[in-house]
Figure 1 (cartoon, chains in turn yellow, blue):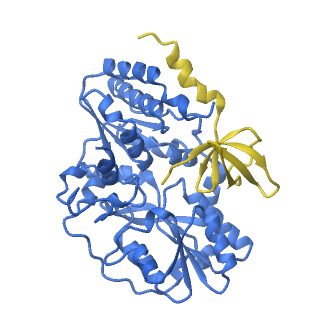
Figure 2: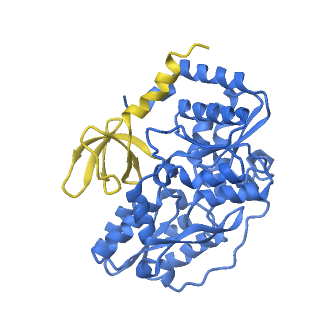
Length: 71
Length: 358
């Protein structure tokens, strides 16, 4: 029930809602929990609300840590 | 980068697994307390990948499952009132109360509607101003800000026929109750990623400092879970107990301040009953008095006497004391088609996950 899915912000409207694309499907969501968000950002969508913006830099760290690692 | 498939890379998964195998041969019990983790662990076959000394235990991570039967009876009683519309997330509709379910009540004519968002429930209230619209407020900290937002919007837009029957719950006190219960030896917690996106890492600190149990906040893709397990095993082997964040792309140490402010504005912490665990001090959320008109407990209802399903061992499953196959009803009297307890109803319930994937 605490499922939240990453989606890309496509459009932001004046009423702080947005169109968010998840795997080709576009959903409307409220942005009121994450005011600082731009078109093109990825957010986590939970029950009609974007609950957090995904940090791209942090997202890549796992690959940096493991890809070059020799066993 | 779409933040999904990249985290399913088999080569990196193998590398992490080899490291996990190399670190420790100790017998280690790790508990996950999020139903989404429970399902992700099964779906990706993570238990089978791990060395036999690492045992994953499912805890009380499914909000539907930890909702007491008396609360289901309470919402059923409300659904029987004249001119009431009950709105709920889909997971709750088949959960058995003492003698009925919302699904049965709907068949018998009650107006029960499944919504995707609390804002959909609010819209139903706007469109049906002559009726009372009650939202069934089940969920952990991930969901609570969305409930708080709906209440604040109802206040602002004067939607006075909207209310919430809250059994919203807070996870860290339940983790404390499990540690205090001492029924299961927990060596580390796989902490819930999306709950933590809201609350941050600080609320788990007491688990690491007072109970000396390592905590790692994890994401939900296979690499996230494996890396989280690696971090936990490493802490255990190093003799450390800290709160670490594996899911850094979504979780900040301080959480989401706006969401927390909304929760704190609308709700107060109250003692709350957890199915299978009992009453846990300050583990639930109820609307503050200033938002009392949006609290559905203002309506008087007669609630039937609670009847637990005979033989159902949901409680012990939720505490991680037994696995579902140790319940005499599992796969016999209890199946997803004919669930006896909530753990078999919700797709995130431990029994339903065992049934589907084992």
